[in-house]
Length: 374
Image (cartoon, rainbow, N blue to C red):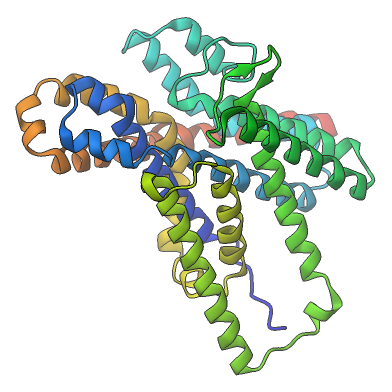
């Protein structure tokens, strides 16, 4: 088989991250932000009604994290739990910390909520507050640590995969049946936090997807398979169709309320299909977007996601509430201006906070872990 040469970065996946980050910013922009600040209009209300299921995009971020967890672990089997945890703190904490500071000192929000958030304790069951846009960061952090410890502790890979499969299954069974497919994030039965279950399910699915793909690549029949030009064209056509179908299904599910599946596990299935197609780099869509010009946008995704609430509150104070008549007359223009500002703030945050902090933490990490090894 003619193997696709893997790039250092999966630019199409990075671009997918960016697109999904922008979509979920738009979703949050409509829900409980611009409508609440302006009193709403028929245009805003109808748009918000259509985009009601777009919050399920978070499941896609969890799945991607699980895929890259697998790649990280088997690329760096010597990586310790302490070093892995340090890297995740370095990646997630700086921007979250700035977000929490602005929350408390500029926008005068509840300081206790920010206290739990900055310690990665929101929405894992020990905090009563589970609302807010950045709820997913704490379950994301602790679930990655949990799975990494599991990888380190369970040496039998067959038993490990069975355990992860069972965790995924029961997590999604609970989520689907408790909320009738509308995945929540509150704590139920005094024990089960739905946000944490979403992270356990999604990251586990991403890990198992990576395991299955790597296992298939190692099969002798796949290694030895050398397709003809006609077979290659047929493979490209089939994967391109699957890419288009999965993208269309996801977008209909996210923004087409009338045609969406009320069970958001559908988004999990469709995204896994899309992810496999994009990773193959054999479809037209995955090849088109597997370029650095697109992939570069992916690095801004985390800062865009975390800082979106800051952007909304800023827009509320300086734009929305001071220009009600303009906003009522120019709904689409208002949404575009607000979306561009939110994305721009995330990009600025990347260069001002995330990138410098990453360099600083990396430098500190080298000192800490090299000294321990010595």
